Length: 168
Image (cartoon, rainbow, N blue to C red; front, side, top):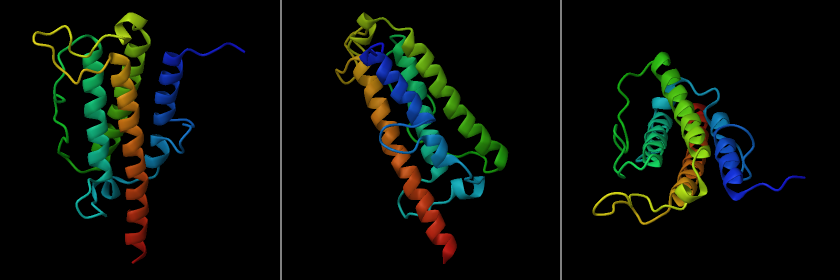
């Protein structure tokens, strides 16, 4: 059996977080499966984001991390940390999910092409003054995987809350 590098293991687990069987439990695709656009826009837990808002948030940060992989200065995502839902309909919901999946695929493709030396670079070190959190590119990718796993857990809690509210 061929030994897997740590970077290959990271990319595999990031892919599994999206769809597949991550080690921690169900993937994001399963969390979103069967959720209608009306359910996705609801706020079943007071003060918590909606499922749709979480999807937009994860998409934004996935795009931002992908942008940083090329050496771009760290910043807030172009469409914001928590982009607003602009249109609530089935087409817009389908588009939001597709954009998240595409952003994830693009990120993984870009990350797989990076050299070990680039993965070891400090995020933002190419800018004067250096920008970012002082983490490496590889650390940023691990952080995004943690970010996504955290929000996938929230998606499942929101699903459960929607189901509980529909029984009342």
